[in-house]
Image (cartoon, rainbow, N blue to C red; front, side, top):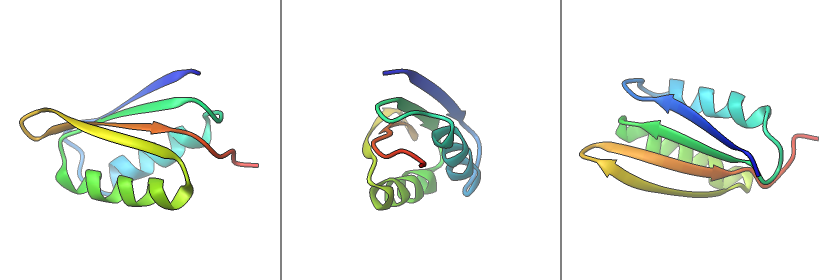
Length: 78
């Protein structure tokens, strides 16, 4: 399992989601993407997309208004 980090601090939607899509497209099943964001709408949009795609996901608030979203790529892009 490989870990990738994605800094989306101070970026409004849809930029964090687009960056996550691109990064996940280059990752293999079992890899973990750790996305950092401070934009509330990112939580909603990314979670909704991840659930629809079948990846595993969790998130936690790391500071006031700052989150880390953990996405484990489950499916491949074959």
